[in-house]
Image (cartoon, rainbow, N blue to C red; front, side):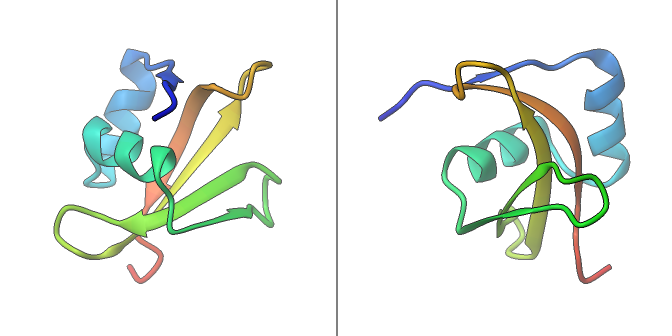
Length: 80
């Protein structure tokens, strides 16, 4: 199993929590996505998967140079 590094700061942690997403949920989906796509608005990578309560969750992130380091940007529930 590969090792991924997630670069969190207080701002982004608070931002995803405002959307009802935990750091653990975000990391689980990005580490093992059901589907990966590109954002139409920002061209960033989006990983899709099911949240802890079973809803579809989109996790937006940027990759740092080594492609094993993720910088979280935002997360949201597309159906909301």
